[in-house]
Length: 293
Image 1: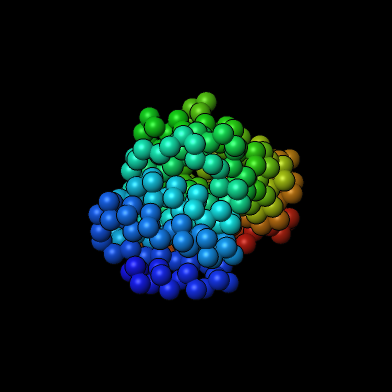
Image 2: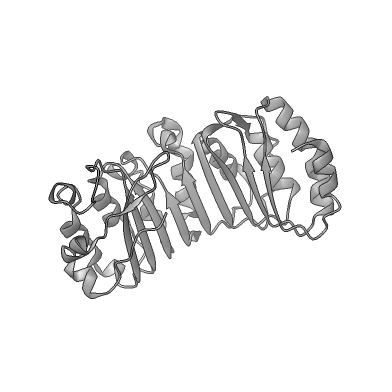
């Protein structure tokens, strides 16, 4: 994306969705580039409601870049930062920055630094109205800085209707667990590691309005068929079936279970016919469905 490209966008008055990919460049170049063009983009493209930012691999995204996007584009209802090998870094942000008024969908897929963004969210005078959150930031769950993530869920978790998250198991073995604050969830996608954590997570869910539940397990399976005896012994199908029979899941219409892919390996569904036979209660409710990434 060049300055000439950004200038041309000002003529796209009906633009509703924009994807920006940045080749390798310094954080300062990002700040200057977007700081120059975002105010004009926000003034001319008033219908822009969705923006996806894709940094190059192993790059750093300044918090200021993200804040500038959210503040300069007031009509933005969906923002996605997709760079699983990049990180968000600290930046000085004026305390007077206002809350993004329309933002409802947030997708943050980075290697490190989501806690920095959520700390800024918590500093805003007016709380966000985010209803859909995707948060893939596995490294941060091991750090003390997760306090900002936990605090965000404590304050605003009850507003979420959709959540896709890769939480470290420590977040659920301690009182700082976050799922207990998501009282209004309708749709949930969980990435579980280790396999044993899935039962802890299911017991932590408070919402009785959950409509769909998808779980992706980071389980070490043998190559070949998923439903070999050896592979099936590594997944607690019967215990999951028992957990799903709890009254909190009475509204559940769809449950899917997959093996974490990682890299170029696509996730595989773990709910084969043999597996379904080990989950008679859920099978009788007809809620077992093939996993799709």
